[in-house]
Image (cartoon, rainbow, N blue to C red; front, side, top):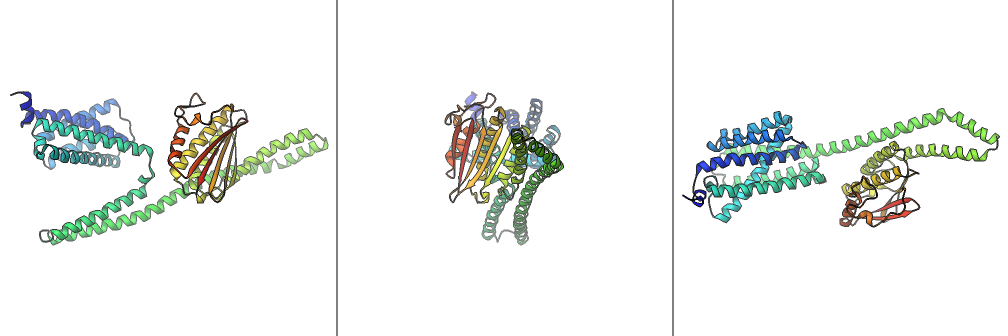
Length: 438
């Protein structure tokens, strides 16, 4: 018997040998998938041990008949490995188990239907004929890898559509489709399905629907409360700094007045001007802290971003000032994209200002009937900056920077008609004017 005959005819021995090899590959794919899901970085030793466990259990289960014992041989080692080998808690272990096997089931279902359609064969041929078995494995794992890559891209982009509230809404929609499907089945096969089973299905479906509705309402309230608490934490931090500055100013008030009187009595106007400028700088810091509150910056995302960047700039001895003359609650642009752009622009401004002699950042927000103009100006050590090249991928004026930030900004702007950016450089002041249209 030649190789072609061996591969195209039923051969349980070869199938069992292949099962051990294939299970090891399956272990590697599963490990990569739940590593992305759980944000863990397994060591090579953990991967090899997991692959060995899955290979052995997969080979053993392939020798047994398809029953509940077979399923337990596959599922229990997977679950125990996550808990003991990768040190995950029970909740994460079950989550990884369900998601991984769901992805595997989808891959098997799609590949099985494709191959049965193309090869005009039965499902049993894939577990008895070596060539069909190899073809099915290649297609299954190919689809599994594609699903893993898609999941990784979606997870890394942190898309807003996967918030807790939206996930529950999607779950509710799927539940409605399930109830419609069950109603159809019950109406078609009502004579063959026992009444008690029909009643149980309807009760469970109604309970599921009610809990989903309640979860949406509760989750919405919790997300709003969480957002308010985060803003309150930032505002309390600002109030604490403002209170400390005012206390210091009040404590030194008599000394300040006496110092001013000394300059006046000596008619030292140059000294008084210098002293006044230093005093004005202290007042500016206090005024900045007064501006940094959720009532003035009435957009939670922008408020959180500006407050955090202000504290970061302060730590680097950068003077950041604010002029707020806009109602930010009118912004109806994609806040995820807007936050990314503002974050990159502010980070760049802090980096450039830190390297300059002046160490200044000026932020101005003003509005008209069409747009809000968000201007970020920072001091820079070099005014010879190309306002076109800075948006090219890889271009950077800083040795430690990869030159990706502004290129990302350019990509986002090219797809968003409600955002526009204008860049200028004038006398060592670099300005980015972001227009946010209503």
